[in-house]
Length: 240
Image (cartoon, rainbow, N blue to C red; front, side):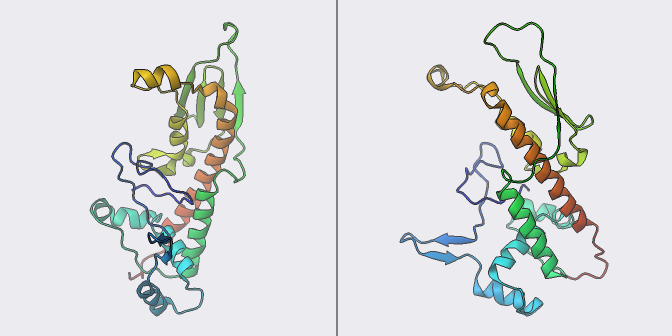
């Protein structure tokens, strides 16, 4: 199960390529007339207040709590089969406030990933001595977890990426590899589109992509730190 927060309308193929099965659970929904409807029901709010009391239990807090729980490695492993065939069910965990804080931190990173502080990666440039004027190095865009690096093209690689950064996954691939895949040069199958509109070159976006990659590494490392803290909790006396 891939999970990602967003504050914009997204493609239904965002996390599952080609089959349009990415589902959205919005904080609010809207009627045809434009009226905003709270997507967390009063029934749901009452269930949470009955369990945790009214202090700090709001619908926004419940939304953040749910986002955190859905990132919980123990929950995801325990209910892996259920998550493949039915809509997630949210358990009641001890320390509601802690899970809300985790959820708020995760949503802030995942929605605002372009504004987080970049991870301090190292850029290594080894320009090839012979290259025709006006040409660019061939894109590679491959990551190597063992070496902790990403090869961007024939000239440039990024190193100093912690191995745990690859543990933050969006669907079936890491967030790092997702960024790399989105920047690959792919020739459209349609010959007309290929001839008239295939103008994308990685070289034009290389510098901005390096900046984005450093920020995604930061999000990945910090996300894994939070989920590791979740996993380390003593659950011996928990009841859901």
